[in-house]
Length: 156
Image (cartoon, rainbow, N blue to C red; front, side, top):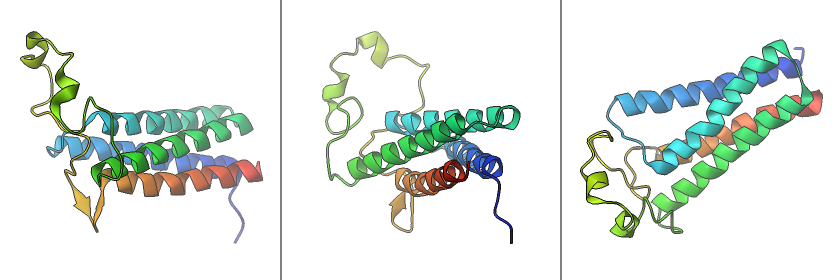
């Protein structure tokens, strides 16, 4: 079996990020509203997917490295978020624990109707499979994608 070219591996990794991002939106459509940290995990996936699009036209070792960094970033945020959910450490005051994160909001902000149906706290597990929450699964899969990016970088 021949080894995959770095560009091909990078495209697989970028596609993996696009799939994880799409999965997050599917869960959202199914009624699992994201918290603030969930959104933070989506941004690096979007960047990795865009890097994949650019790599199609411009194969670049730098872009492969940036893809690895994006995958690592979302994996790290997912691991941190999973730890917040497990109460291993504190999360951002704005979306976990008590209501102290609401102190800076006005009455108009609290009554706004242009937000999701419900406020989701970052330290609550809304869905889990095999005892791992969505952020934990994101951390695992993103770490695997980071490994693919790094192998592609090493081969380039």
